[in-house]
Image (cartoon, rainbow, N blue to C red; front, top):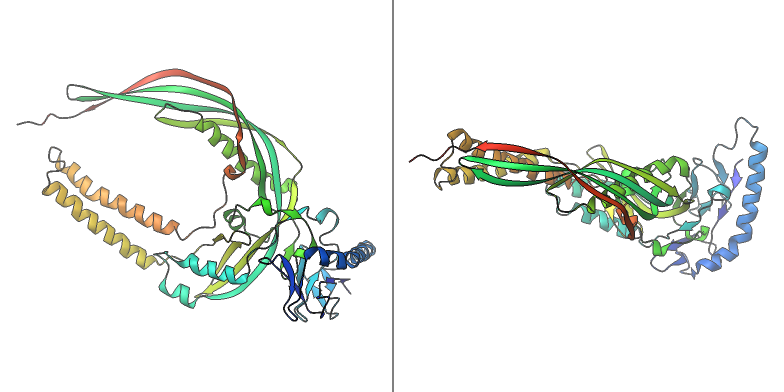
Length: 432
């Protein structure tokens, strides 16, 4: 037998409660009763505590048992034994429909410090998905109409929030060019410089999801959250949703936050380099002083669809409504668009060269190179842009949103001239 759960039921009729983000209240769909979060917290506090203590004792006594508890717990409403993985803390009983909180899954080291409650409901998630299809030229016509939504699930996803003081030291290679003519020769002189920049800056609450169930690209792409909505954690926000506890600890997740911070430090130092034509980073070392991470739950709507046997996953920020997810590409449509773009620009370039006198002073191979290469490059660019529209679940590579711009301080700045290179390009004089 598994550990007994705690079910959050309506005090008026005993029906299942769910948290309504729009009202910021717990509501009962059976009798239309509404309750404040603090009221439900007070009603269930002793029951939750008792269940957690009992669960801890059962877990301790079963620790030497080879079979263990296997993630099983008992619905306190109907008595059904439910089985889930160890990271699922809140779910719904499939037999009686009551929200089920697995005792001790969100307690002790696994108790979150903060939570952003859901603000948007499942209807908003479906509407956002429909809007996500709009304007996607390469989307197959049958996808929006015939793909089937398999599941729409609201999930509280575990996140680690990292604060850090960063000190960066970067070396850039910069150039500055000037051009003049000597007879038929175009002379390009390029000065090369070594540019050094050191600086300090602060980052606040860089988020990294701590669940292996959730795809990192989707979780990164639905950022940012409005941290003004963070409140102290309460199980009373959970009914009506699934809640997962972390299965990747703060130390394991820190590397992702570190890479994002390093990238943003480099960008901030690069922004202080001015007055050059080109700037490239040669090296950037970043030392970080990390504060203790904050463990929080964030609201996410997960939507799964099926189309022509393929599975597509979408995620929506349950607070802001930002939805991401990759879409299929109609390759035939892309090819036709590419050919149309190439043909249109080929005709325009051909007319410019042969009837407009463009590049008339150049060799014939240069003219044909222009006529063919320019349309080809434009075609590739258009196809690349349209294809990129179909991919929105992308892992974050920087933490600019979490950088306190007012904290940026350049502590060392030194530019030194290295050498000058000269390039000569000979142009044949146009003969009469």
